Image (cartoon, rainbow, N blue to C red; front, side, top):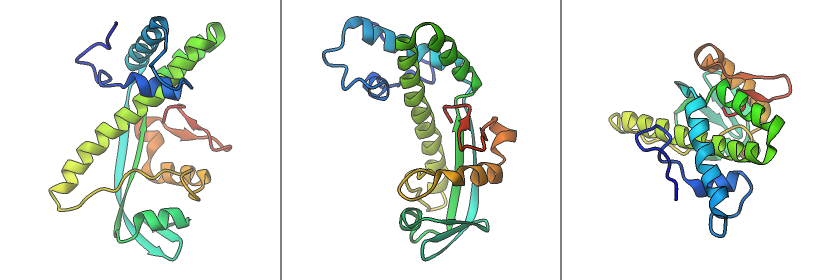
Length: 192
């Protein structure tokens, strides 16, 4: 069986996660061709990616279901419960870059089944990248006797996706990472 190239930032990708994101229940029972294609998709996405991240520590005040992050107010019971007891928030945005969008777009026009595997690989790799970057932040904040809670994104619980624009603008995400949010709430690049 073919293995993912070692020594690359994406070499720890979990093929089961890639397949799950692509809509396949499990690698068990998959043909060698599908597994091989999933591995190739990880490698292609990994090579096309230009991962970037930005994070910013912000003040946090919570009153009832309203969370004020550097003065930006977000009403969400889910977010307030998640951040209960915190006095600071860490805003975080990451992307794999537009090269991944272009790669998926090329295959979407000629081989949709492989484009689905590329989408799955990209979803798995943005999570892998975010996990890696958050681990670095956790080590940094541990030195200050602080612990980080798990990521909590717009779209989780009752935290509306419409908050993405204000958060990415506050972070300066476009300037530093190229992440933008359309009027309809779609993030670009897609794997951000």
